[in-house]
Length: 132
Ligand SMILES: Cc1cc2nc3c(=O)[nH]c(=O)nc-3n(C[C@H](O)[C@H](O)[C@H](O)COP(=O)(O)O)c2cc1C
View 1 (cartoon, rainbow, N blue to C red):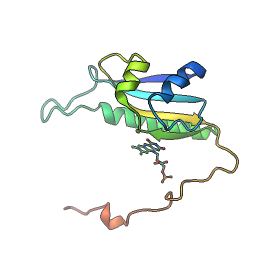
View 2: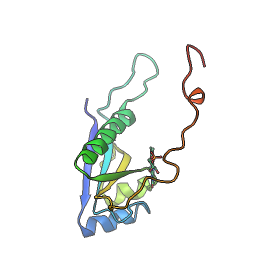
View 3: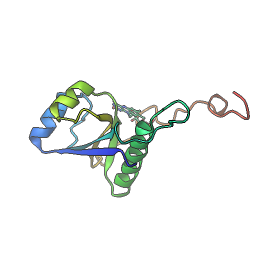
């Protein structure tokens, strides 16, 4: 169904509007707002009616991050934005749900992963065999 709807945000005026919606732009010169259209996403109608839009948008956003990284462009997944402000500032159609904001830019040469980057829960907290 391809429900993803992606808004490219760049230019001083638009970035100023973005700063009204989140504190997490980190000076990035461009951002991609990955949304989905509630009216077109696939639904598990036969069972619980659950819609696939969040999953579809997350898959798209993840692959865009990987594609950007392959071009040397860094990105941060930002969920900490005010969805009502995003709707207003960027005139989102009512049926569009914003899922992920990817703030994009070339990393500084001395950029490092965050201090918690290597912290991982033990496998037995995450993976279960045949029963939880
Ligand atoms: C669902 C989700 C939401 C996130 N929201 C934010 C955010 O609002 N602001 C932010 O600075 N980083 C956000 N991040 C990015 C994380 O802070 C972190 O940089 C990223 O997950 C990479 O982590 P790692 O270096 O431990 O692998 C988010 C990540 C995920 C997966």
